Length: 224
Image (tube, rainbow, N blue to C red):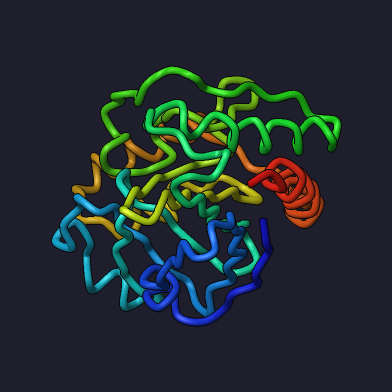
């Protein structure tokens, strides 16, 4: 497994091609150049209030993996894409189980920092806000701390392999997403209240977590 540092426009990164030759897994650590709201593949741009997004100087893009909207603010989150080609030892035809080894690496990285966590091995949750906001629900392979989502994982599968998109925050701020969406004031306030306890951040330990999880991934992905 190789590690690559990537920066620049988020749209370019999301369209970055994944070459499966040679059959080597990879970690792409991405640092966006500006704040971005990333919609899931099935979400329509009409969900976003263009006036609010423009006023906040937030770019809006869509990823090709599923799930709800994600706020990405440079310096306040850790974004890693992990790519596994078909035929690699970490490849699995089972969509749910395919995420487990990756979640275990994140979980081990948390343990390295002395913080206990739990890996979610169940299916995708179905909360009221989960289809709208990624961190409003829990999916397979994601990591929880005290029942709150800490690591978000979205998966895209192609002929070449699987691309797992992972994000962790320093602090969970649901309004970073909600304040850009087309919602009534009452629904926005209710969503903010109900989502406040749905997820968690790592505080000032983003860089520590980055180093720990990269080390774990490089070790777990060293097999071909």
